[in-house]
Length: 491
Image 1 (spheres, rainbow, N blue to C red):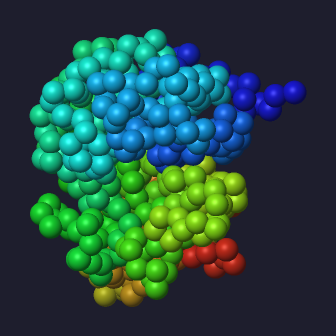
Image 2: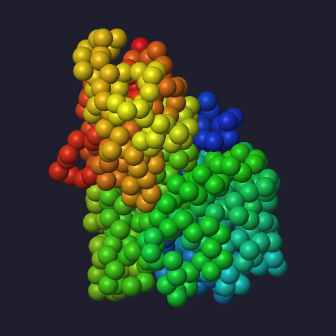
Image 3: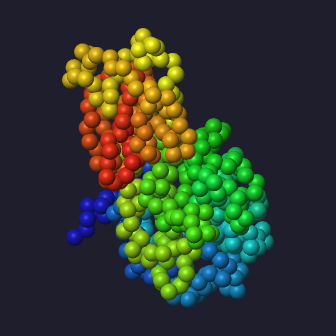
């Protein structure tokens, strides 16, 4: 008997995936679509069909709706069975007689049957394009093969690039994007860039680019230059771990296009990638990247796990970037299952009607001698609750501005705020007290909740009157310090 998760209709049955009229988010038909992606670059190369089903069904049941993978990672690409993708490494000569493309066909169909979108890169740009195998002399032949073969599938999103700067081979990338859009103008197309850059830097105004991907990458704040191949010497905006800054920057571009962090720090990847003495990014870190980018206005998020993106399968062989877990174990790690809580939260409040709203944060300035903001400040609560059940009778409470005077915060003290007409969401990484102006909710009664981003559990914290200022202190938990404040207008 199939689970209810598998019985759900495919999202494209509501209509093709497209950009919403507001230019910020996605929808299928008229139904909003929160993009929750998983990184599976070597899906077609490292798994059997049986293993592919285990992986894809696992992702489906965890709430993911887009799987990212590439057809050809290197010019001499073979799959697990030893079948070659190309004849003599020439993209103009796909090996259609062997088993490689038949295996790809089967996995593509499997994803369709499970109701999963596939974000597909025809080639991995940092090796196949930058390495010279795919060029202007053969790009048309290869792309026509790929586009003809997968033209009729309803669940494909095309991705140009692949961990590569757009100026490495801009004519090739532009040609790929143009051909993709000509093949099916309604199919979405984007570009996956090099670490700490965005597709917008090179292709934002291209008609074929429907939305922007950026790669915030795998480095810490202090790992600016490591004398490694992935140093971003051009440094078009070094933001360290502040992936929300990429969203903020690209949201201000015209024309307006959706934005996603297409490659943040993966769970269980070395910080900085190269030095095995460095610690690993873990579940708390991938949560931070997810909430930071989405509350800054991203159209969803892409999760990644080091062992899964490469499908590490043999402990006797050294994996890339310090991989230490088999992929079959990694799919059960905590960060995998915690992403669905963000998706569920956004869908519940109607994220498509929201926007980043950090201007609601208080910084402790503009307060009177009594220690709270001046006349007209409303009826502040503490810890998300007033002092009585009847909000109209709630007495003003002196605000603890000493705890919120650095409310705008930097790095791990950063607090992100996302709000709509009838809701407000705020995320703290380290359990900081947050002061918020609720002037935008004047005349409304709000219910306050704390959401645990580890478990997804909501707990009611009390009523709050809109119109004034309020201070909220997250509860102390045993499973982490990060917390999400949820304020909902009550009907």
